[in-house]
Image 1 (spheres, rainbow, N blue to C red):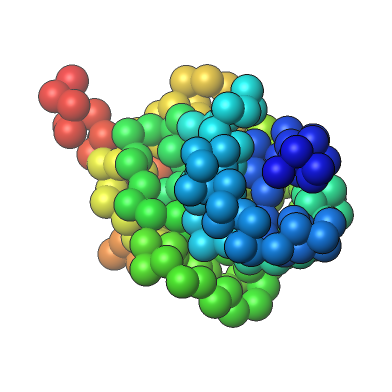
Image 2 (cartoon, rainbow, N blue to C red; image 1 turned 180 degrees about the horizontal axis):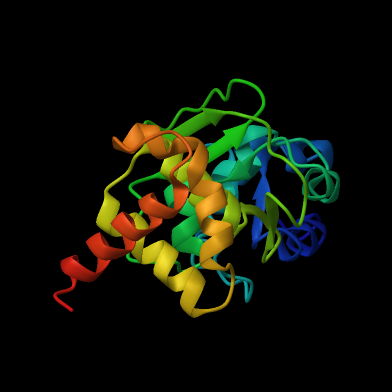
Length: 218
């Protein structure tokens, strides 16, 4: 462990405190060595093929989700994936990471332009383009996460619980992340999914904001 631990620690410090078995193998470290280090309490297995140093100062609340993102392409260069992500955290998970509304994600939501093969049954994938950085996604502590506009658009299209979506909208307006007019534009293409005439984004926003207000008894 002493021969290669420093190199892997440095790598882990730059990627959520995590290192993948593929990255370790590329540096001459075999899986059985990772297993031994795990048994000794030096490493902790966070996800299949992804490990964290137990005594690392680098820790993140959503480390397990970051591990799942790393596991999609465990041998790839992380800086390249951050610059042009093959998948982004989206929908409920993105809202939770960005602390928007009262949404609590039940598993990890990922969006990618291709099919995502995952081992975890709690991971939900959506096949759509990831879009443009700064418009559709941006980095949050190094993890590509959908932006507030993309979150609202995706959740409206998915027809989630209206009161929860309304709290996301209310937070975006209250925190001056988006204007109500802009949110109406984002909701318009999906208004018909909510039983309203197609294009009635403004009416849908009012319905969702009212549902959020009623849910908290205001």
